[in-house]
Length: 134
Image 1: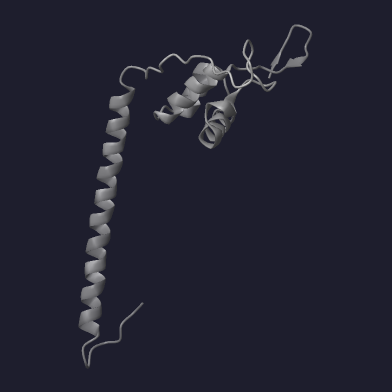
Image 2: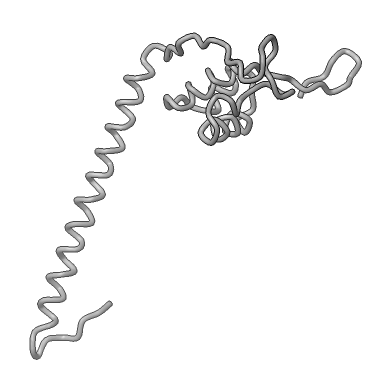
């Protein structure tokens, strides 16, 4: 909320198109805190829009009041194509490649650890060997 000149708190309203652009940018992997700051919207509200969009599509993001201005019920204003910011796709690819690399390292570590545990069990499971540990 923001204050007007009389010191009263006023609620801010965003258009459906604005919300759709914000949700689209979130879906492309933009940092939500930075996006919220840029758009002047709290991160919690962006997450709420994203959740509502996933649950009900564009209709779930209609402006307050039920039906969009200047249209009949069910009217959907034409959407301009959402263009990701320059370099966003490449940053997202690099981020995902880093995650895949880290997951591969984790898998290799756990495979080696499992191999060692199995070797220890084989050695201790022989007749006359020490008892196995958990």
